[in-house]
Amino acid sequence: MCRSVAGLLSLAVLALWVTSSSCIHDCFCPEPSHCRPLSANKRYPVELFAFHGGGRDWKHYAWSKITTIVTSGVYDHDLLCHAHAHKARVVTEEEMWKEDMFDHRFQASWINKRLYAAQERYLDGVHVIFRSVVDAAFSAKLPQMVQEIKIKFKQSIPGSQISFHAPWNCNASTTICSNLVSASKYADYIHVASFDVQVYMWTQCFANANAPYHHSQTGIYSYIKKGVNSKKIILTVPWFGYDYTCKRFIEAGRCELENLAFNGPPCSGRRNPKIPYKMIMQLLSKSISGRIWDDDLKAPFFVYKIGKAFHEVWYDDPESISLRTTFLKKFKLGGIAMWNANYVNYSSDPIAAMKTEEMWNALCPP
Image (cartoon, rainbow, N blue to C red; front, side, top):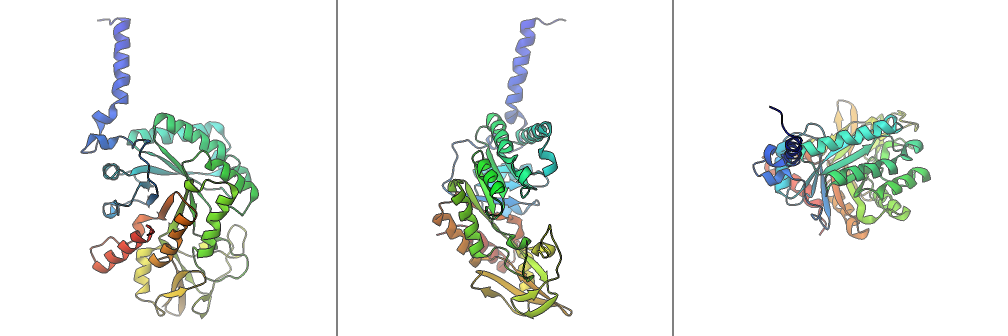
């Protein structure tokens, strides 16, 4: 039986309405309203971002403090329901490489795929890691790319949040820095990764702090001085450290490394394994030095041995992180984040639980 044109139009309108209302019918959360992205009006005076690398530890996060979860890896709809129940946004972490930025069609496809996934999963936005930002030609594409992401996401998901990662300082290249500043105008937040300062080591090749206090401070200030709105800056601190194998151990704090080149410099801390805070605490209990505090770098470290080989571990803990959270008030920053939330121990062990709670509390300045 043939339908009238009016009838077909009515069905088409109905189909569009059902599609746009799919959150009500297809919601996987116990409470259907938790499938709706948070409203644009939901803002926090100070943001606390939690980077989540997968697994189920999120059940034990300090949800009274979190405002946004940044997820990577396998999508977990239970996490989204839980986050929205606690009025926290969930955004997905996405990578873009240099080779992908010079094709405008690919850019559009990249954005559309991420937007479609965000809508299907009821997400609140996207956090982008541009993997080749140190390349001047690549960085020139950043402002346009971030602007296009903002336009498409904000139109389709009102209230969505757009952010991107940035190096620890804005002094390495005037051109790159200028492009980062321009791109920040279109983002809600720019995450300044205040760690991995020892990636490029041009002179002495010795184990050192992952996030030296004065480097972190001057790095944040460098962005503000160049014109980034301080309220858009998220200070991102590490919940991990580096386990350095000493080629020659002179004394604690003088662990000479192998000269292994990395992208130019003759030596790099990146050549040594990154280890999460929970593993660091296990190694600390077996160290031959105990925790040592470097008052110049304002960071802890310790020494341990495997056979005849000396190792030096530099990391951050509640004391060093608390010192860095003072930047939030000093520079009037938009918030803080940790990389990442499942690097601490959520077991039932009372000592581990205490150390984990201390790490969460260190993120919230008095």
